[in-house]
Each structure stands twice: as C-alpha cells, then as structure tokens.
Image 1 (cartoon, rainbow, N blue to C red):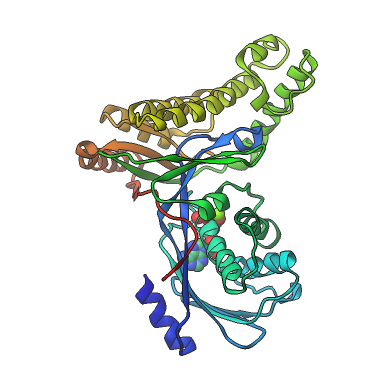
Image 2 (cartoon, rainbow, N blue to C red):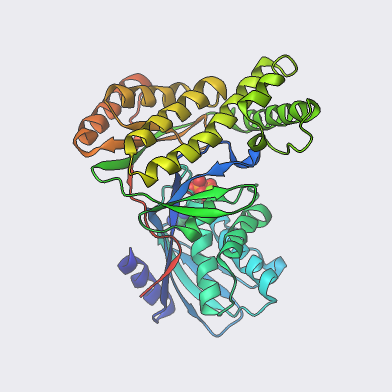
Length: 383
Ligand code: ADP
Ligand code: MG
C-alpha cells in the first residue's frame, strides 16, 4: 500500500512526505451497551488507512484519494467545505483540529489509501479520520491528547458528514495496540487494555452483505425501551439509577408487571450483555478463549431473541458456526445485517469458511464476504 500511495504522491506533488496510518476496528463483545452507560470491548485491526503528507507552503489542502482516484482541494475556512463526501472527512478533521488549537494549520499535500472494506462494520471512516487527526497533531506539534484526537474524528462525523456516531470507533482506531483489546466504560470514558493472544485461534468476520432497512427505526425503539425501564426502576425506589448499567436483574424483576414484556426483554439483554463484557475480560486474563467464545454465542442469542436485532442471514451464519464447532460467533454491530465475528480454532478454519460460503450461497444466492482480522496497532507515524 505504501508504494502505491508514494507513486501517486510523487506523481502529483513531486516530493516525499511523511507516512501516517491508522486502523479499522472490531468489537469483540458489548453491543447496544454504549448508550446504556455500559462497556464496549473493541480492538484495532490489520486493515486500515495510510497517508503520505507534507507541508506545501500554501494555505490550501490538496488531497488525493488513491482508491477512488479522486482529487480535492480546499482551504481551512468553514465555508471551504469540499463537495466529495470522502474529502469532507479530511476537511472535517482539519476544521475540528483548528477549533481545538486556534488556527495554526498550514497547507498540506496528501495522498491516501486504505483496505478497510467500506460500510462493512469495521469503520473505514474512523480509520480515515484518525489517520489525519493523528498526523496533524504530530506535524504541527499541537499536543492534543489522544482522547481529544478521537473526539476530533467523532465531531467530524457529527458536524461534517451527517453521522451521529458514538466514540467507540475513533477511540479504538486511535488507542488500538497489537495484541490488546480495550474495555471502554461508556459512562466514565475510563479504559483498560486486556491481552488478546488467541494462540491456535483465528478471528474472522463473515459479511452477510445485507442491510435491512429496519435498522434506524428499530434502534430508536430499542433506546426508548431502555429509557422506559430506567424510568420504571427509578420510580420503584432507586432514584440514583441513571442508565441500565445501574440496574441489576433483581431490580429489573421488581418492575416486571410495570413495564411491557418487550421492554423487559430488551433490558434483560442489556444487563446481561454488560456483565458478559466483564466476564470476557476476566476470561482473557486467564487466557480462557473457550469462555470468550461461549459469551459470544450468548450475545448472539440475546441479540437475536431478547433484543431482536438479528436477521435470518446472521442467524444462519451463526448456526453454521455452531454446527462447525467454531469456538465463538455472534453478530457484530447494531444488527439487521453486516457481519458476524467468529473465533475459530486453526484446524477448523478452512472447513468452516468453505461450508459457510457454500451453504449461505445456496440459501441466499450470494456468498458472504470473508475478512480475517488480527488485532493490531492503531494511529501511528510510520518510519
Ligand atoms: P464504515 O462503516 O466503513 O465507517 P462509513 O459509511 O461510515 O462506513 O464510511 C465510509 C466512507 O468513508 C466512504 O463513503 C468514504 O467517504 C470514506 N472512506 C472510507 N475508506 C475510504 C478510502 N479507502 N478512500 C476514500 N474514502 C474512504
Ligand atoms: Mg463509519
């Protein structure tokens, strides 16, 4: 990738720049927990974004997307926003950086490329934002801390790309480390690294290549259910409860007749899922990947039957994993499509992938896409 980018950089800008990179991410466990004040458990992956950048002595950014073979040029003022949606990510990062450092940026030339599949749930957009946020901070010695770099990416999505995302993707992309997953407490923003060295196992994503339209309306309904239950528990004598994070199964059972059966089920999933993240962290400290896998299956079951955000395609992939003896498998992301994430013993890998492709294609008319991933470093400068 480096050679490909450099060839284009030299062709367009006639010079050498500095290389920066960042990564896409997976989330091993902890789904629909973020807006409930709970934990997520992401890690950066070996698929990312890379950019070659140098100061160009002007007051403009000139940036070339190698993958899209598209070029954009823009100034740093709010009114200089480029048309192309990919360029708005770069522009947004510049603007959000300026907001935090008071306008010290100078013109840049950049060429970039990546290998995070777009829109497959591995957050190619966060990889792009993090690469540029990290690079600007380094090139201009801005001294912005890492959490704020993640927020620059998040605010870019909010303010320049129309995506109202949380912080997990940018957090993972900026803080990611090879061989480590990170438990992020979405209430306090505290985080902790956990070792992830699954010797004898591989992580692989199977992309169902479907996206059901239900996703956004269902998401809002799920959030409303969580809020109903929090309100009911508060009223039942627990005034300090703020999120489902603060609710345990005993408290939930006290509002059994007060909330709807559906809301009850939703809350049950969330409370269990928050606990599962903690259980997986404990298991990793013991190198116990069998327990990790079992929790992944439990998550899938909860998302499918209690939270009801799975779909036929994802349940099918999960069933195949189970039948093949795969250690852990679950839907990753919000649901209604996208990928399953699978923890597979080396010796079962080829058979599992072959069977998943064949049976999925026979049933749904196309194969799932297969993305093996390794937990890797996040944002960095390349020497
Ligand atoms: P994801 O879930 O992968 O983050 P998004 O829709 O949030 O999907 O972001 C994808 C967008 O990010 C693309 O439409 C494009 O604008 C930008 N992007 C991602 N990867 C690249 C790339 N390699 N080159 C140019 N733009 C990219
Ligand atoms: Mg994105």
